[in-house]
Image (cartoon, rainbow, N blue to C red; front, top):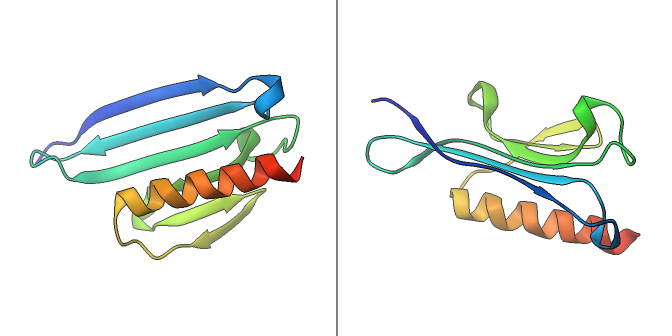
Length: 98
């Protein structure tokens, strides 16, 4: 089955809310099941390596994993919705550290 990219958004975060960008990419198969995803918080002021990716979740290379300031660690995948929730919680925690 062919994959189709159904979401490709970049949201600019105001300086007051933390600065940077939130990127969301999602691909689905013919049945509407998520096959690939890339969720990222990008802020070159906080982290210059990894194209500025401070935080990210994706399943590139067939492995579900999280990026945080250059450290990559596997995550247990139960659902895409769970991954989105974890990403949101991690991003919110970063905002609160400021």
